[in-house]
Image 1 (cartoon, rainbow, N blue to C red):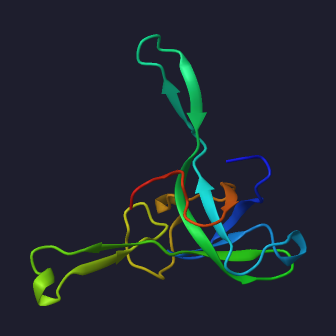
Image 2 (tube, rainbow, N blue to C red):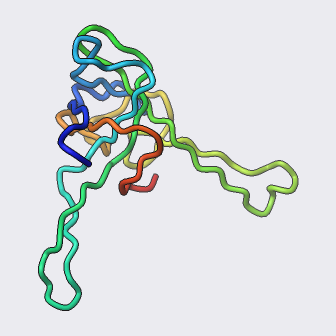
Amino acid sequence: MTDQQFQAKVARIINNTDLALNKGLEDGVEVGMKFAILSDAGEDIRDPDSGEVLDSIQIAKTVVKVIYVTSRLSIGRTFRKYESAGIFATFGQGTTRYETLASDESRVQQELDPAKAKVKVGDRAVEYTGEYTGIVYDF
């Protein structure tokens, strides 16, 4: 990720799937923009022979897509899903699981206790286009 990417911060966790970012129309945010919500701790990559740190990479806690924008804030929603075929897929009984902001993936669209959220107020959000090519925590 480069320094030229649009950056914001998480201003509030609204529910299990929605969060508010501290940037809006006045800052150039538009509906449909995608943001990676970054972990504070990057991941050091070490040389296996020398142990020297080669570089550090950013890890995203989740990715969100902007669904609503006002002049000074925007609302991002999780959108990733995991489809599991399982042994019953031939009978049309596979399962689909949608990502939430909860660290334990509890019920969708419910009030979220901030202590149970994987995303925290103040987390950095970095815009990306296309498919997110960085590392994202699994859900």
